[in-house]
Image (cartoon, rainbow, N blue to C red; front, side, top):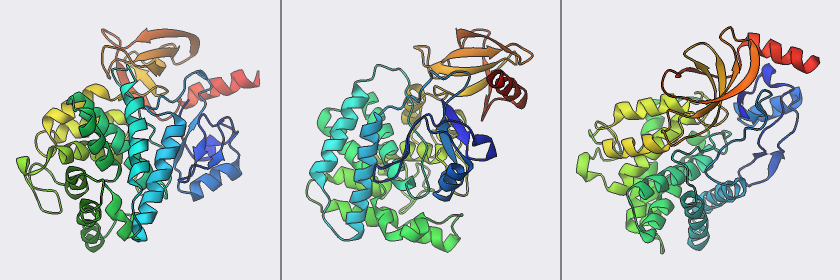
Length: 365
């Protein structure tokens, strides 16, 4: 399967992954054929893209670091936690630690040298899915730093709750366009608000609370809320900053389409050493699949291929299935690995029109 934009071209495609709301309820199940009504309804819910079955490689599934059930449970719990915080209720720390432990177990049980994370989310679910992804990415970096289990739990819990202060700015969070300078200044206070919510809460480590406070600080002092520099920024917050920046770039927003993983990673590497911790960014780059399974790519000889998985050669050298010849005519699929003379030239949102016509002709025949 692969990501497709929810427009008229999506009509007739089949969902490759079930779509759930922020409470874990299934809206549309995997395999559902997208009708114009479904496409419209999903767009009205704030979805820009979905995972669809790849007609030329139907066996390729989304390679998410979390099981679908675990992701749904974690997303649902983050939503419930933020709603409780908005109502001045107590946080269910025991439940949060339980889901954090499950996330850590699944992450540490993977043998992949590079892993993928599901990025699709609606407008209303953005903060919840983002929080789960930042937790995953932060835990991955904690593993790279050889943190012990107790430290990993505090790191992952802080990452899961890093945006809890946004409950005080719900209207701005749901805004369908960019914020004005005044609104952005107000939104910046979510870091301090989140810190105040967490720092005195029983069961939340102070270092975890500082992730909410400092995850928008930058090494060069250009961040907020205090303009901290370099070593003034705590290690947990440095980790959260890398995770937060990358996931924000790779997630759809109402006013900005998601950036492909390889482009987002390039931006993160550009900021390494100036805004983001250089060592952490390098560790991150070595562990994230910048060409996730299902990505449609053009090769340096103009052939079209789809990524089938990762290899021990690193994130930039995935396994691929070549689907066309150099003239982009459908050909018998050939399995290969990127490397040597074979390189990825570009990433496509979908197959070129000429290839899609061949697919349609084959289906009609």
